[in-house]
Image 1 (cartoon, one colour):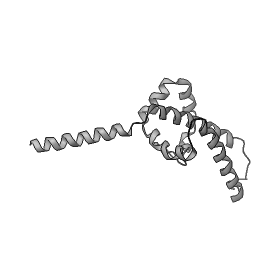
Image 2 (cartoon, helix red, strand yellow):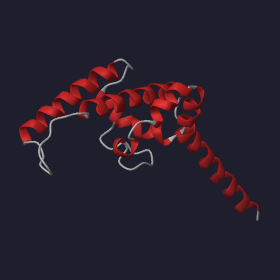
Image 3 (cartoon, one colour):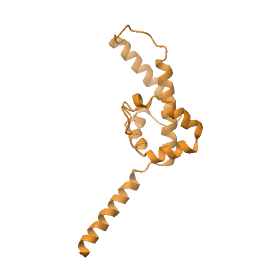
Image 4 (cartoon, helix red, strand yellow):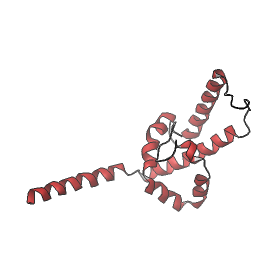
Amino acid sequence: MPVSRHIIGISLGVVLFAGNGLAAEPADVEKFVNARIEIGEMMTNYFKGGESYGSGQRPSPEKMKEMGDDINAKLTTLLSKHGLTLEDYRARSKDVFADDAAVKGYLAQHPDLKTRYEALPLNRMSGGGGGSTGRGY
């Protein structure tokens, strides 16, 4: 009986320690939430009133490449204001936004940002939710 208690105790310790390691740093939450808000607003404005390619038609591959390059340049500039690179944001945003409690806590402290965050089309930005960030936005 005592051996099983020790195993359970050790297992709980490992789980609790791992859980603390997953918590996002408050400074990271602030940077990433602010960046996501600005990215969402920029992307919404970028595609608002855009060119019409006809019903169901996609832009040409050349136009798609131009748009991708333009968006990446705008994202790079925007993220640099937060001390982030595009690669860093794409790599780390999933983990930061996975800490839902930290994100909600930060937004609760900043009602103006919460309003802007909730107005974002996050279903398109996040690939369906769950902290996933799709292309990293």
